[in-house]
Length: 248
Image (cartoon, rainbow, N blue to C red; front, top):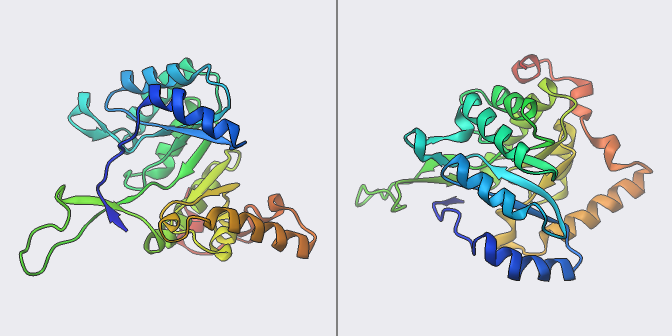
């Protein structure tokens, strides 16, 4: 899927007043994804969330343009990543997840910068920058020009990036993201080094996919007398002998 819908949402005040209480009543484990155009905006939202009841963690989306730096993405610069994460870390006691951009020139260095300045968990990866052009009109199909590419097409790239970051930073919990829709996808990300996964695009086709995969994973482990934790990093222990295994 290629989209440029942005990050529209109800805002932090409405989230706290309307959305979070309903999610809490359902017994949901809630992770708030936070974004902003400046460091000050990130910090302001995080401070507003600090004392919210029923919030398990805060995830920073750092694939956003820093308007104070001419639109450069926070996640594309380890220095910008470190500056943002350190300020947010000082503003919250919550578990802090940093969602990394696959478009960073050096994802491992961005991951290390986030870890070193206070991230408890890293999630990777966000969407890849893509483009589609109408062959008749020669105009971009998206009014914005480019958009974020997600879904099955990015899975091999996302798995490789999880593998590389897990190898470079073996003590940092990772959440794998990118094209997950069936149990084998989950197992692949776990083998690469992710401790958990996120599912996005597949929900548009099957809103019940997350619950189904949780059940399928439980059955998989029960049938083999194993735990999910034993599946994490299997590929790291085996090694690949290839370029991805040699990096980091």
